[in-house]
Amino acid sequence: MGAQDDLNVSSQTDKGAESFDRRLAEAEARMRGKSVKDDAATGTKDGNADYSAFGLAMRLGTEMVAALIVGVVVGYGLDRLCGTKPVLLILFSLAGGASGMLNVWRAVRNAQV
Image 1: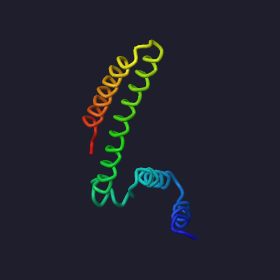
Image 2 (image 1 turned 45 degrees about the vertical axis):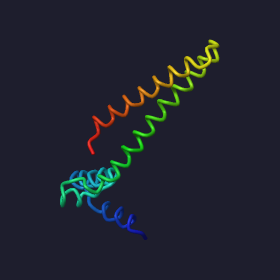
Image 3 (image 1 turned 30 degrees about the vertical axis):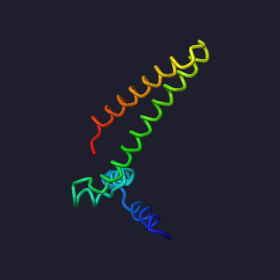
Image 4 (image 1 turned 120 degrees about the vertical axis):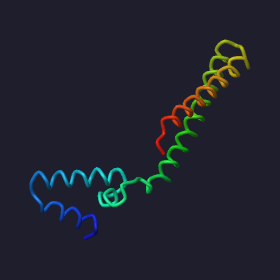
């Protein structure tokens, strides 16, 4: 019987609304990646700061690359369709890069790391 099984067995022995509320709070805390004891002891989220910064960095990189790829694909497709070889590819590549930078700017401005 593992530690997780012990947690489930001990939490099910209590009955009543208070027990349910406590177990719900513990489950929500586990889903956020920290325990209720850590919240009560420290009151901060220093343990998640590195993960949040890494997640934000991955999101920013992904948004920039995705916007640029969309711009290149749309520009290439319109160039093939219209027969204007490099013109629309260049314009939509620039537009994709600009929209990627705008998305990154919005994400950084709204980030709470």
